[in-house]
Image (cartoon, rainbow over all chains, first blue to last red; front, side, top):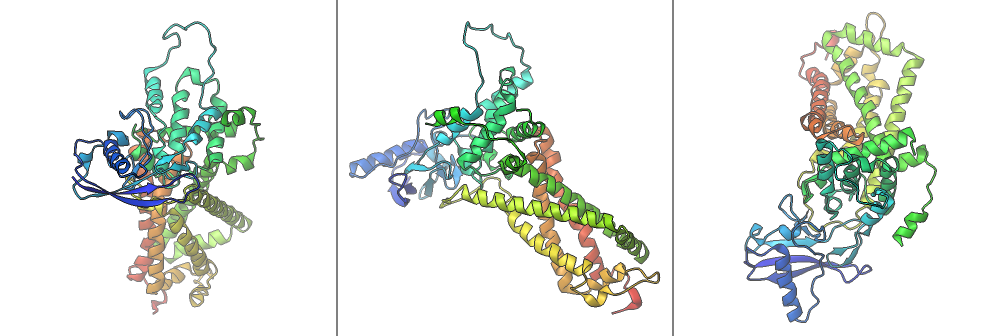
Length: 249
Length: 244
């Protein structure tokens, strides 16, 4: 099939950037979206033009690197998948596809479709960790964890940190990401040592990075490739309010 | 660079100002003030529905409220302060949220954002204008001054006459219909949202209880509030003084 691509091109951080139109022909419906972009880039290189820069790594939906807003939806039209798991059979011959980078003040565009997501790392450094003493390997299952709590923790821990929640949020809020990172520790005994300060510190860093505020649209949950529930945001609110109101730090 | 910054980061003293400036603190303020204002809207509606019991109960109710004296002013002051905090906090959050995405998408789409949620700032601003109008109409009496001076046989302010005659004007009634529709829209997102902002929702509570709480409260307030102007305008409430 033949497609028209409207893609964001931007030389570097300080370049203004803009949309550029490309025509691509003989796209197979079996191709993944990123393979289609590979074909485009090969043709651009063959014509002596600069290929389009985009992030990708594992191409099996687990690394969180690919980050494209396709026709206005982060990770494209399929729910519960990353861009690399999206296939061209979802599109039709003659379609025009808009491809843009994540848009957030906290995620500056480095080049074309690649954004700087270090803000997420700084939030993790602020409080998204547990302290563990080194030493001999502890016995497995020495600390009992209820199945229901383990499930809640593991569901939150499935966050791959791709940033689609921020890209989708009308306010560019990072609450789903931060909520997931707080929730994964909240339900496990190992997470309790830093519990009182974790939410406060991560939220402080989140605000300092320039992310917006949650207004409960739940658009983040709708686009999350790991389908993380917004209950993690309620848990984050709870953790933050508990610490702030009891002054336990 | 980042790790060095976070390692040497000194903790700013925590205090109410810092709490209110944080995104979650500000959201909890929106939720709590919204809860107080919703409770007022509900109580206001229930009190006013006494008009369907006839002139005597509603005039007595009005006289009772006026006789509260300092307590009435205390309630008014609390409500005004709540409203100001709600609006000021909203204004600040709106500015921050706009700033968080300086470059808009060329093609923007959404999967599940609702109209009510997206239009909260706009419905809020129109509602503020309506509150001012409503106070001028029935509290200060500057909109229809000729209806504000009636008194019943006991010498009390004749609220029944003021309301029923006031809504004979189709323009006044239409404005109340529009404003209450926007209020219902505002409540349908706001009421469901406040539970999430205060962190009391879980997936099993969220659907159907919390998600339906907003639309349910909004619909109830819409029906209750609009019953009065519409019944007056349609002639379902007996005209006082056999007038007009």
